[in-house]
Image 1 (cartoon, rainbow, N blue to C red):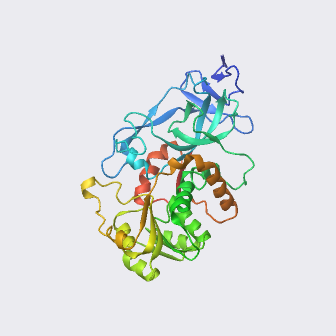
Image 2: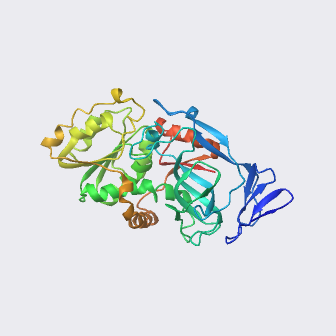
Image 3: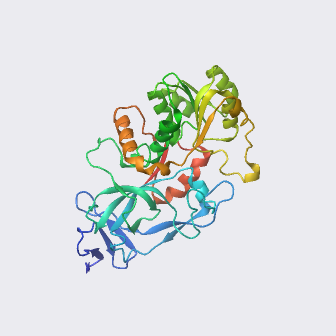
Length: 379
């Protein structure tokens, strides 16, 4: 049921806790309750939609902002939550989703809202497991206010360290951290004293991967795309860091690892992968996380790896992976990441953009190297 105020519609649906949002009389704007019980400013309800699938480098023109109704946002049995976005994650894998072609992740559809990792606040609930005011994280659409099922959503626990932002559950405590930790556990066969090389090391996954290798007793070599990022890597304990734009990767690897690289964690692909294959030690392990250098290229222009034959003589193990295939092990891995983060063994480094309007530009910035660590948009 709904009750009208003089200038707003306040939802008080039967069998749910008091709603923490109001809708104006015209049904075009909403506002959410604040911690002190007052309400924030009125805002129009909007979503981002895919305007055009990307060919080559993506741009903000691939997206369009659309006003959407604010009325009718009442929890149902099928979708018992009303959520408002707090943080949005943008990630390199999303480039494939913007191509219009399904892969391990379904393509984003034209004229529909993209989705991805988000933190949201529950502002109305008919679920016993989700209370108004809870922060949840999961795969959610790029919409300001919306009804949602509970499937795939996790409540962020209370009682965490006060300096730990909820956005960490999109980064170091979310898929980013899991993408770093879980393949190392499964494929790395790490022994203290191993030499590990991480490409794209100042990105979200790369920074956590470097820290994990250091924690496990490895000598860590890392490449990044600017002198500032190289300096950051050194500050965080990387033994050898270099700017691949100004230094020769193959020579850097020969100098830093004369006995060969035991483990290569690759986020870049292309020529970097080729150089690393040449520098691997016998019995080395290659973990293929991504190939951001190739994502914006048509298939005919992608770099053809020349040194793959070396995997035979060097007895290399090469592993690709999709981290969501290990979802049953996420809770234990997340708990391990939290323990490491609290102990100061892994960092939580974010590049933060502000406001709903910033989402498309922040996504595009991933492919120009503008981010250090995890790219987060905070609403």
